[in-house]
Image 1 (cartoon, rainbow, N blue to C red):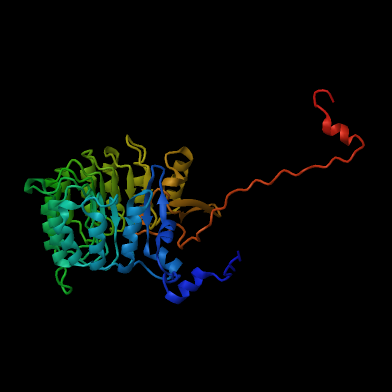
Image 2: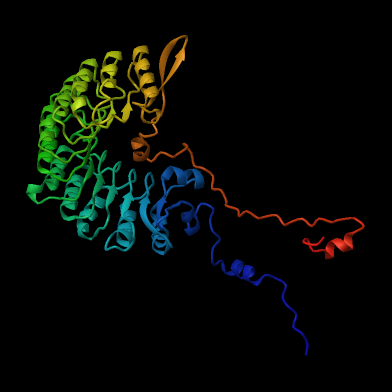
Length: 450
């Protein structure tokens, strides 16, 4: 029987060239293998899928778009690990893509995702309307929508979402161009006496914009709404109100609401205009020993007078973290604040950079660092000496990762290369040749008798 000659050509390769199926993988395509490279694995068999726009762009010269979402949904469902966090910040996802993501992953428990970050994309009020439409079917616990342009109607739809949803605990709608009118709807949805939401614990309402670009809104009405929120809510523990142009007299409404609230622990009033009068009102409030433990009043134009008034109330408070950076403090105000560190509740987190820190303040900081009252890991300045005079340099506070995490900054400022893991290969043992006259005897010998 004659043997058949085997074809030496690669039939599979030739068949692909003829039919064109499957098409070769493009270099910039986001597929399952590349999704795995962006997955952060945890010890409890859960994982975080982090697809930040800048990181993806520096690797593949593109960002995540609507066309990539079907592959992403498929990867999340088929992953051997439970992906509980999905980070899609700083990408080009539109309303149509978000609707696909919502239908395939977010509603009716169709995936394990409970934390969604979709900040700074191209979402409009249509996406918020879909959120409100399917609010009862969501299982998310953390939802970040900041940086998207919702506008007036989007705030009202988000209020409807809060009324009907019972799982979200952390929501961020800062810098979404919501107005005072839509803010009033959101606050009403969070009040207990209006059968509002009782699960939200953290909310960000930063940068409220006026209804028309040519006019500025009355900040006293914003303060009045916040007072209305604080006195009617018993679950909120963290409140962010940055960049809202609040002035000192607005703090009268605000502090009045704080006195009627017993749950707020973290208060962020950074980059407003409360000035010395607002700091004085906060100091009087802190004398009443409230539950507040973290206070951020950076960039508020506070002078030494306000710092001294604030320092008079700090010894009676439970404040553990204080941020007074980027104000107008000099040595008098800084020294008064430093003298309040040793109290019943030690001040373990302090930001001072951006003020006029002179030699007297540096001496006290150096002495506190030496005694252990302060730690270099919890303060944002570092003391150094030049010609017998002490100066302060900026030292990024390792404990202050709020802005680092909030804006999703890369750890090293750029995308790190993906390193391929290689197994350690143990070298083989070398055979040693013994050249001697007793070679035959040595091979047959027993170590006990030789």
